[in-house]
Length: 293
Image 1 (cartoon, helix red, strand yellow):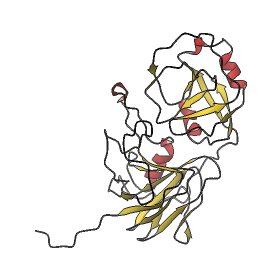
Image 2 (cartoon, one colour):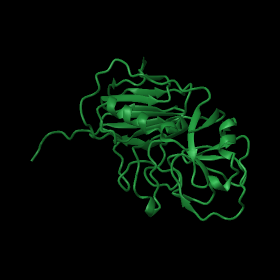
Image 3 (cartoon, helix red, strand yellow):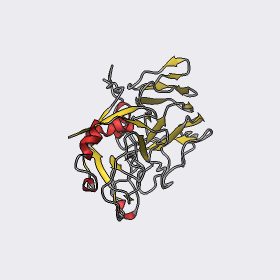
Image 4 (tube, helix red, strand yellow):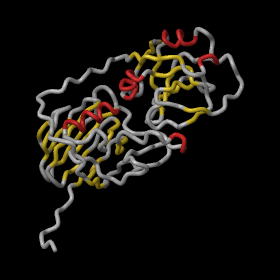
């Protein structure tokens, strides 16, 4: 029988959650036939990088911060890394580097600012955010409510031990600057025939702006309406991340990580995988264009 003093588990106490902060990993792939979407990080590449920097497995859960704003206190020494949309951060009185591993001490208060460009930043902690998994993932799905609740002030997040190796010994990680007007590469969608022959080319020549009515489910655009040439009803069919659906208003809607698994409006085009990281970082009011490839 052990007579030692029990070890207190490391936690992150959230003092200020920021606009929208959720726990995310790489999601729940392969459950669409059960009506469960993949969810997971909107910018999975940024989460993978943060996890690699602190020595976690790539599948470890971290925090996805929308427009930053998180303030939290660590109860034990931890390695942390911040990636995605670049923003200033301070651990206590010291500036914390971006896209590099950083050691915080017990009692350190971490303050994360608002990104100057982009919208989603990712905070990884060595060991991972160890909330209970639901259907094999710790991701918060804002559409279905599956997974942990969005982070609130007072939330206590346990830190686990999901590590895969040593903390990365790096001096600098190149970070791509987000363009002022991103260009998303698209390919024809499964229902492009429901639109005029020149619709995709017209879409590629138009300027659109991200609507404030956007979230992890999808990005609504404002700009030249896309008009259908068929008015009959479309039975619900499967959706993927990056699908560009056209509702009756004609204003395109691009689906993100928490999109529904089916939809009943025609999909005119789909954003190519290589443009999905740009899609994940679009912020309200930002202009964008499409390029047909």
